Amino acid sequence: MAMNVISSNIANLNTTRTHDGSPYKRKEFVCENQTCKALEESKFVLKYLPDHPDADENGYVSFPDIDSLKEMEIMIQASREYEKAKKECI
Image (spheres, rainbow, N blue to C red):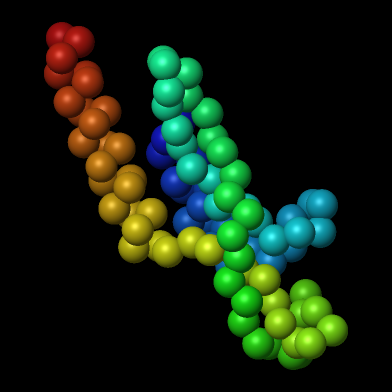
């Protein structure tokens, strides 16, 4: 499940418009008390691109606040945790 969330973030790195018209919201995989879920973050990075179709009246476009290197780091960590848990179950 964590890998799916991370993959979705990486795939939508430049998604400025989703089905509801807003930019993609980065998701974070969180587990508490044996319950896991994906939470959405509403942080965006504004870039001045006046010719972009999603630019606002001032020429700025909202992009999801996603760092691909950080997402890859989280993915590697999740993979290691999965392998560790798998070995403990054997």
